[in-house]
Structures are given as structure tokens and as C-alpha cells.
Image (tube, rainbow, N blue to C red; front, side, top):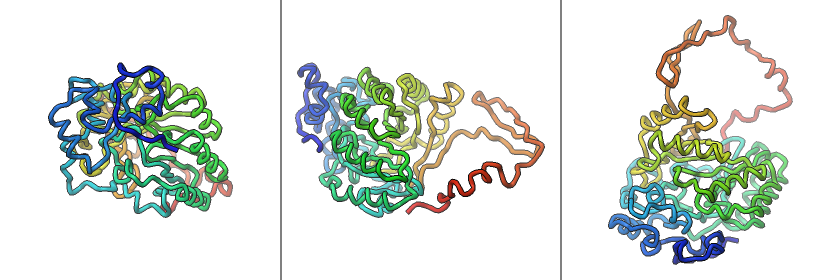
Length: 397
């Protein structure tokens, strides 16, 4: 069960460490309004107005821990801009969508989004430890209609009935806000489905509520390997001793951790910021996985960068830092088209005898083509024929 959320946050200077480090206390004292946030920052008139006028659009909320990372004097602080609503959210564009990824059109049963042939998303909770202003699921997250137990049961039955599903992403809301017992029940049900090979969990808890990542939770996850956690750091300012310890605790329990960042204009849209973020992630053994171009969700045009800017930023990463630290830049296509990789064009020309490319410094190089053409049938195709059936050619349900 989720802890009951209560209003009225307190500054860390006003509470004892035992309370501050209690993740349930953090949730009970989430910041909701201008009075709450003013304990941590000197709010501008625009911020106060944004908090008041967006109240009916999308829930506002952040843990006291995350708010304590704010720069109290600067409204352009990347933490403030991710947590506090702006008046720009009231400006809806024709190209923006309530359901930008077309998830509802790929929901065969409640709590399931099934867009890809071999994987699906299992929606288990509607609450978060922060309501990010760029959230692409704001139509259902933070509401008053959480997924019911019987709906999750039906979703698990659906997964069991679809042998092509090999990979399940548990998402929400934030699944790590569930009790370890309830999360363990869901993981156990999934692990008993023979064709489910991989279980992933999407969570921003390591970033905004790191005290939740305790040994008991990690042990629960480790009992159902292979389990992967993808988290969501967007800026180096979010990496603290506590968040680092949370990620390292997961990794030390054998749980690989990846990061899915969102490119946000004026927040992390510079090459130095992205380099610092990715290098910091690698140092705490978190693998940069995706860098998302902002989704076309209602009221977020002011946070999206142009595609040209995104590609230029990626050009400032690859070659200038370890390849392990370079995420894949993708657009999650509006309407449910799936993730599409984009990036700088390193390929200049393909010829019969050689290929012309440019390197990360802009210098042109050539690569010789092989003298013999590729065979029509490879050894791999012969070897695997009849062993691994090719059932991935058709689209998902």
C-alpha cells in the first residue's frame, strides 16, 4: 500500500535526521503549494502564479529532499524548473497531445500498454515522488483513480496469455512507491510466467527519494533476477551523496541501473551540462541509456528543444567522452510509432569500393568495402533455424 500523502512540508533544518531520512515521512510531507515551496526558495511572482493557475491541469508535488536541492535565489535553477509549474503550461499548441505516445490506443486490457511485439508496459501505480513538469503521462498520473488490484491481476493474466512478451516494464507513476511486499508479489507473478525473460522497472525514486532505496527493497528486487532499473536523472545537480548511494546499493545487489534523461530547454540543453551528467552517472555505475527528445505533451512546448539543437548536442558528446557515457538520442514518435534513433550524420557517401565518413572532429575518413559481396544465407541463419523462431516481424497488439 502507498503511504497516505499529507500536506505541509518542513525544511531539513527543522526536522531530526531520523524523520528526514524516512521515505514515508518525505511522502507525507510532499510540497504542494506556494507556502510549501517558499520554505525552500524565494519564489518569484511568476512562480506563485504558475502554482495557482495550473492547479487544475496537473498535480504539483515534490519531496522535501528534492526541494532542498533548489537554488533559493535563482528561478532558472534546474531543480526549480522541473518541479514548479510555469505559466507557459497554460499555452496549448495544436501539435500537442493529451496522450502523446498513443498509449491508450495500445491498451488491450486495463494497466497494459502493448506497442512492441516482444514487450509491454505494466502500469501499477498512479503516484510519484515528484510530478515532473515534462511528464508525458500527466493524463493519468497523480489522479484519484489508481490501478485496482483486479485490474493488475487482469493485466498479469494478459501477459501470461501472450507468449511473444519476453520483456515487461513495470511503470506508473513510480512502482518503487509500492511497499516491498506488494512489489514482491507483482514481481513473483511475473517471474512465474515462463516466457517473461526480463523485468524492468522505471523509477525516479533514486533521484527524488533516494532514502527509499534500502537493503530490504534491493533484496526484494534481487530475488527476482534478472531485474533492471531505469532511472531518470536530468541534471548533475540531482546527483548527491544520497542519490549516489541509492544507485550503488542497487548495483551492489546485482541490479543493473540505466538512465533515461529528457532533453529540456534551458535545463540541460548544453553540451557541458550533458557531459557532466553522463560522466557523473558512469562514476556511480549508472549506464546512460536514452536521451529523449521532449514528448509533445500538452503545455510543454516551452521545455522542448528543436531537433537540430538535440543533434548538435549529441555531436558534442560522441568522441569527446567515453562511448560508455554516450546515451542514444531518440524521439518517441507521437501517436505510438515507437522510439526512433536520431543523431549526427557521420556517413557521407557509400560507394562500391569505399565509404566516406566524418569523425567527431569533422575530419573526413574513408573505410574500404570488402572485395566480396555478402552471402545470401549466413551461418548464423542456418545455425539458429528451428531453434529461435522468428516471431517478431509483425507489430504488437
